[in-house]
Amino acid sequence: MKDIAEGRHTVAIEAGGYERFEQTVTVHGGEQANLDALLREKRAPSSSPARTVWKVSLGASSVVAVAGGAYALYSFRRMANWIKPITIQSDGSRQNGVSSDDCGKSYSQVLQDENVTAFNSGALDRACTWHTRIYIGFALAGVGAIGAVASLILLSRDPEPPETTGRGTKPAVAIVPIVTPDGGGASFSLTW
Image 1 (cartoon, rainbow, N blue to C red):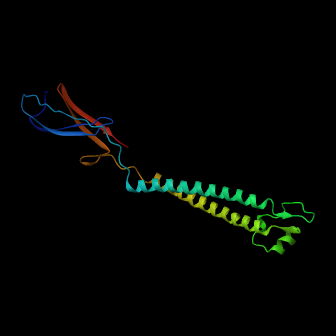
Image 2: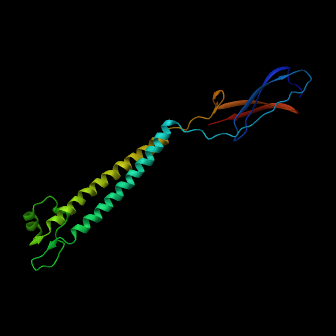
Image 3: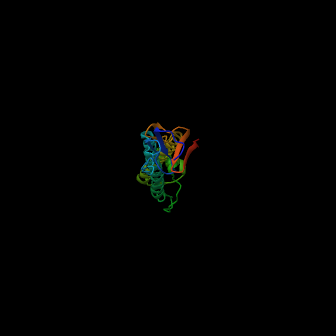
């Protein structure tokens, strides 16, 4: 190679998808200098501990939201099954006048409010138990949804770890000398 001063020179090689290679070579006047370069593929940057926490939080919150919604739906169906057959009219026929709105009322208050002669108070009590559980399911779904949204926001605000080389953080602007058997030069790169 012509026009390379005698002495020690640092040679760096950067190629897309590979780690930066850098090595010092000694050039003696009039002699050819050889350099064996081993390019290693870049490994995916490891996730920061905070990103891992937010990813786990997102997954767990999503599971809680889905489970809470499923529990609310299951509770609603169970309540509806108990509500259906509980009102009995004076002629002995069944009518669905009693509803979950009657939860917490006394037997006589339900008779008066719904204008019925009799109803199965045990079935209403069981229906009311499931009615309360619907709200528990909604609360769980809400907490899970809030946690998932918060995790997504924090995950999107936590930056990816910076790309690094053996010397620390990779600079935004780099000028890399290039040495070949036919000549030399430099490579300019700008990262934003």
